[in-house]
Length: 44
Image (cartoon, rainbow, N blue to C red; front, side, top):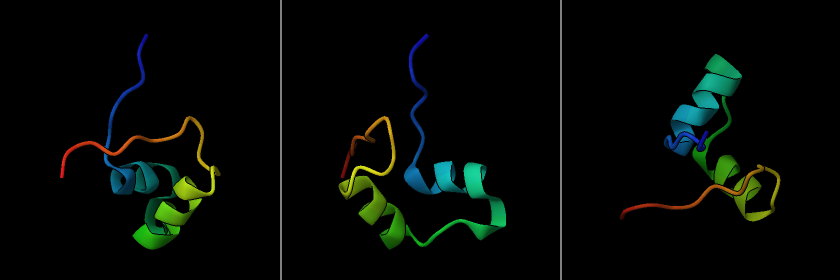
């Protein structure tokens, strides 16, 4: 089974609900390695 791809904001909404962090916070978490497996940026 392969991992499902979804936008980071959609992922955060699914995990945290209405209390999801700001997109900049999510980006910092990704850059600091706090989200595993490491998300990859796709597209523009």
